[in-house]
Length: 318
Image (tube, rainbow, N blue to C red):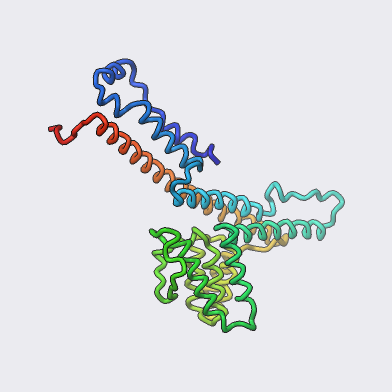
């Protein structure tokens, strides 16, 4: 959505017109003129435009962050559709009985949830989605529970490969991680939430309830609207005989689509859509800052090259 950045791009690129007086001063100083030349400004503007509009593939980090923003925008759209009162959920009830209307509404809501799950699974592309689904098939086959520790290693590997903070995405691929060594401060689960959710599910099946709960809590800290983790943590708390926590989390779960819970469901959607929008603003602001910083580095590099080309020695300036 390139229009989102139009205003920022204009602010960052459009220079103030200081009038003819400054232009004449620039003409009198060739070095100043070269360091503030049209070529210099154009290059900086080009760098900024390419990064903001998604046309620069030189840095995979920016590409990944842009994709994350686009995925979250889609996620917000799908979350909105979970509101029974969403304009696209309006049903022509002429001649239809109440049960028929409820059935249609339930179907549309299930479709929206299916699309939401598909988004969570496929956030990192089709190849990684196939890996995740393959591990899940083995996970759900009770006849091969002996393979669960191996599947756990695969899940943890995906988490670190795609959610590690401060490392290249290819770093550590294939490296075996230990669950007990996990430092959540080194993970940004928002980059791809679903491997962590699958991991929490597997820990529950293995009877490692406290660990399962800890992962659910981290997932919900990143995505409070993750309906799977919301359901899962309630079950985990009940297994831990922690009824108070189970009630607390149950109150945060997605209400049903019955007439009795319709208003509660609408309120849940509005609350979580607002949370998701705030997260989107944070991601956009973070990317914008990185883009501007990179553009400034590009300008500095260009200026230095121009100075070198004319033999300017800045150490002589006293």
